[in-house]
Length: 248
Ligand SMILES: Nc1ncnc2c1ncn2[C@@H]1O[C@H](COP(=O)(O)OP(=O)(O)OP(=O)(O)O)[C@@H](O)[C@H]1O
Ligand SMILES: [Mg+2]
Image (cartoon, rainbow, N blue to C red; front, side):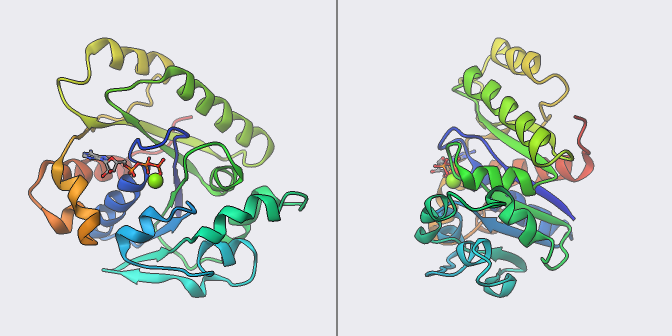
């Protein structure tokens, strides 16, 4: 089982979109896949058209339920989230082990080839839980906006989680999202490669209307427009991920 946290503290860079589409792409390649929605806003759950009420990831992390709230969507398992997850940080403020709730829960999870965790934006307890539970971190980076400060902060967070909570954690890589020739230039790519040598994945996911449209139809881009640029790119990215092992 490979547990991947799709993480970038910056909002709107394509975390949820990537969990959805990489998940179904890996499933189409024959892998057994589980998606975990760790964002109280539940965009992934909405795209999958599954709802949790007071159950899902919240109950799992509160140890009120095990994996019984797991849903299945077109062959992919998914744990929905709900607003109640937003209260977790306050509710668990003084609790020992609050950073490793998801890690503990995953020890009892059914076996999958890939588990993809959709992280919320920001730097809160849910993200620490995702990083503490993960084997690898995958980072979508917006082509148009390379915020080196956020990225170096991200590197520091991964290093801190590795030191204090999860020594096995590694950076699988970063990939450019919403790529278009207009938006990215050689200097930007060179900057990214300098900051993360050897960790920038080959595949860039192009800006694609089909990617934007598919969640509203309750579909991933492969099911919605199998021949679109978005579907082609997410399949290529998933092949790269499945053949890449962490280097750092
Ligand atoms: N390659 C792409 N082409 C076109 N639209 C995209 C692409 N990637 C993401 N988007 C769109 O960008 C918006 C933000 O994406 P998404 O919700 O996946 O980001 P996020 O990192 O999960 O955001 P948050 O941090 O708020 O959870 C969405 O409307 C999504 O449809
Ligand atoms: Mg999101």
